[in-house]
Image 1 (cartoon, rainbow, N blue to C red):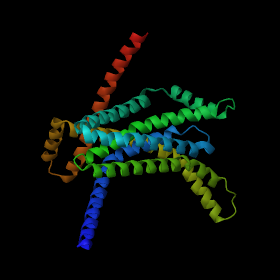
Image 2: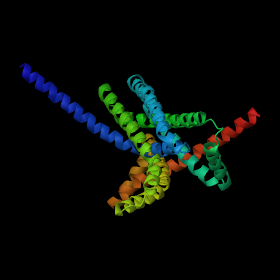
Image 3: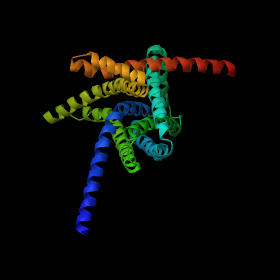
Image 4: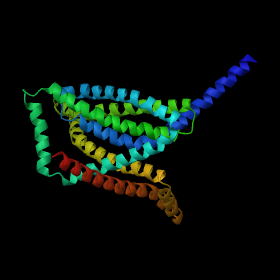
Length: 311
């Protein structure tokens, strides 16, 4: 009898773990869009520090990210336990913020002159080459900025993950959200560390003495890495921005019934499965861009009014 009870308990645990694994997979898919932006933004944040300090800076930001998760995960679970109705509004606010940030990035890229961008670039270069500049303070500012960015995106990831298990038990919610938080943190900063050192690896391979055929191969790989690293950063930035609209727009669409029904009506009007498959992302993306543009305009009006009152 005891053996049977033990087997039953093991079976229940196995089923529970299987459920957690399944829900974690669903949550990971939902949060993957934010991951792309998180990766791109954090890789950009640590640029501008000396090569031998890149990994220590990434590690410092990673530790800050773990602290962010220690604050955010229990907070999200407490909200789910005591005020669960707040999850959907928080998701909507988070989705709107993603859209806002995406439009702001595009606006900054389009409306910032090349001269202003060059001034920013030269300022970073001067800081690196000037021995009188306190690099410790310079790094601290970089780290603070990256940790603030991480906090916002981590909150998005955790709230989205929690939204996928909103109706599950507190144990399942805790397991899924904790696993997602750990996977995302380790994954993001592991990749960031690799990305920021790609150019150093390329330079190391390129400067190897030519002794044999293998040396030439290493030099060729080095050239490819040096060419690939900046392109990868640009691609990540573009993919990350697109993901912000898709994820943020998707959250808004699913949170507003009339938009959700409109999407379903459009999908039902198509007979082609390919068109149906594309409809959702395109619709979410358009909603995300419009929501971001409107929120940015409102923000600019409020900010301008505040500046006038302040002066």
